Image (cartoon, rainbow, N blue to C red):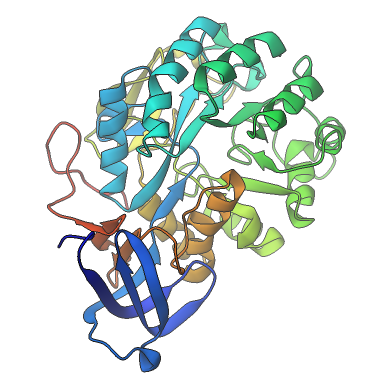
Length: 404
């Protein structure tokens, strides 16, 4: 099908991102949606998909997949994005872990052209202005106090392609860093922090505008009844509409009861489901890299290999995820969240946070559509109006298993 010459009409159950059309039709041409509504109001012929049609997923936090990672290699970045696209993620942010300033500048400069050409949605800096005590699967040697001059250089290298950055509220020059991000159109994200509730609340009140919480609960103090920590401040901000909280609902990073609790408390309009996936997503168990650190994947769970990183509980830190966004959506539904809410948190909410013109099946939006079967597995995918064909494969060319 040539999307530049023909109109395509699809019939099925449609989840637009914010509502369900139980018997609907969507049409698109030239890669853009031209009509969506109830089948009874459509007078032409539409192909019956027998599926649930949802917007292409939007992932704000991802380090790679299909055997390739987001770093300074554009070819590897393309391969990682292609893998996730083959699983239904059509709007992909590239996350960079903490690294020396010159390395970050080089990496951002290398990825910027991919953002400018629309191959990536933007760049997320996960550091380096974090808490060394809560660095998780990042190199503690790369964690440094907040440095506005360094951040300015990295943002300059990206030329407007850096759309978010994770900061610990207790880092030096926090307010100045936030002001710099906002001036460049990037969203400040609170995470990888040792801060208490009061410090986090004060940080969030220091600046008006969009806020995000990087993988809520993970790499921060736990929510306790006498020491509520940053989680309580972030949930309060999300409940009041001032913050979007990321959840890695992959069945590994969070208990299903935790996922459902957050949706019940703040609603899908303030939750962004993310994968935090690394190169091992869609690949077999084995040894991989996350930034400069060695990672071993066993039974689909990625952990750092170096015993020096072992925590107080005797366990090695989880090193990102190995799931794709559709896996996260399935886990979210299994946790007791309705499918509409799960889809909204995987599409509309993250798209709005970064200002992306994506994440909805709506008039004049890009025709990024995923057809889901009864088991919530992608059966057909359209990216900018073109249907992707063939089996889902890894960057190495081998069939990529999904993680249930």
